[in-house]
Image (cartoon, rainbow over all chains, first blue to last red; front, side, top):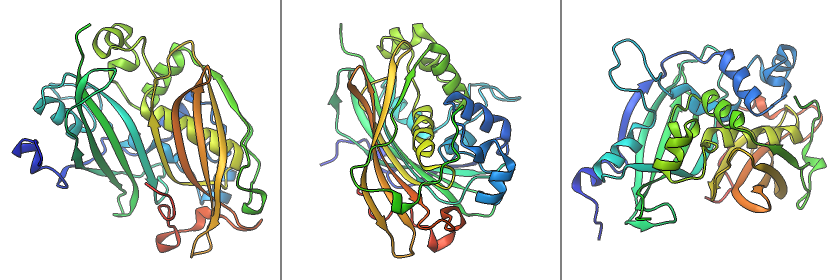
Amino acid sequence: MSDLPPEVEKLIDQVQYEEAGEFPVERGYIYTSCSSVENGNPLFWDDAVARAVTDGPIAPPTMISVWFRPHQWSPGRTEPGVPLKSHFDLKEIFELPEAVMTDNTIVFHEPVRPGDRLRTRQILRSVSQPKTTKLGTGRFWVIDVEYLNQHDELVGVESYTGFGYRRGEA
Amino acid sequence: MTATTTKVTLADVHVGDTLPELAYRVTATTIVLGALAARDWRPMHHDYDFAVNRNGTKDIFMNTPNQAAWFERFLTDWSGPTGRLGRMKFRMKGSVFPGDTMVLAGTVEQVDTDETGCGWATVLVRLTVDGELMTDCTARIALPTTDDDNPWTRRGDQWRPVATLGS
């Protein structure tokens, strides 16, 4: 029998936080991301190759989460923007001050292109019983993030496993 | 910058093949640049005091999207630009810190053609530091089946990135 509080139970498999990315997909971040891992794939550096192979420039598929991460600050924002709000909600509900991600699955569908405006939605899939790891005691949870482009085409689905925890006594 | 002008086709790939190993000396700049490139402002990826005293780790550590980017780079260095990622699943068993030399090594676990005629290689990638496994990643990457095939032209039901790979 589940030990989850009703406020968490009712969130399982429910779509939350449907929101648009705060800016269109742009090449500056593509170059910065490629630079960060020294990715010389000519798809991202040579427009002739991109035209021939992908019918024009695309973003590296693994950048998918970049496009939904909010600005740390923007006009009118009183708290730092955080992505994956469902994850932070669970930390608060369970009063678990720390968290790390342990697993990530990404399925790539339509390519993401400069100028695209992506929309996302978050779906909590599961929350574990309390567990103790070397980091502390807490719970694992799985959150899916679905990404669609401005044509309502699915561009990807990410599944994160997070571990929210409270550090053990030293 | 690596040169990725190669074009691996499905016929070139066999179960048990190994990918060229990548060894990389990680610095604090690697970690911070990777986090900021991913728009990940969480302090454990740039603030030593927060990482040590709040997260309980020994230093700032590489974030999840940047690990994904390293895996993508490793795979497409091998496949060339016509390799198209379909699915990637990875589990982080340990963290990558400044001062580590991370080594990425890959082995082809499966080669198949799906019902649409799309060719696939399933590759197990292991990210190790000093021989200790930090992250393992299973990736399914589409490869051209012939010299004039291109997986990037597939759309709609001709693109099936989730078939055959166990969860």
